Length: 228
Image (cartoon, rainbow, N blue to C red):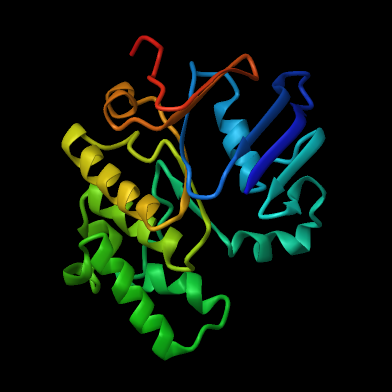
């Protein structure tokens, strides 16, 4: 499903953010990516959705080597990928419904299907009753739930979450994690970068720890392993 082979990423300023990473993540897994600030986690995550391009090596997502993907093919590749950000990245002038529907409108799905599918995912994240509201009328946790709904409306095989609870209070973070757990039980692969020690140590999944651009630990049902 996701495979990196001898992947390096060196920035123009001379910093090597990722150094010789080899990893395989199978369909249906839930993986936490942890490590200290500046360890290379963000670069590792961003390369999976082609926000960053490796300097060398192979990155296979659903059988496609995205390291060699032409720029014009990137939007097509991303249709089969869901991405959830720490800062939500919602369209401020669109309603909850419109933010989620937009992901289907750009690929020209039939309007009847769009309405049905959008309401399904809003029901999953418990926001059907706020479908007509704007992002500014929602709490941070609700905005993140809209972001999650948008990420899964295309029924992607993989969801990549970059610090999805980073801006949320503890209670809201647990609510968000319940949604990710539900998505995962339905067969979607989830890769989540996080600094949340309590979540990692309580909801146990595979843990990949990155330090100085290298994978230093890869454990099934692992723990966070760092000071908070």
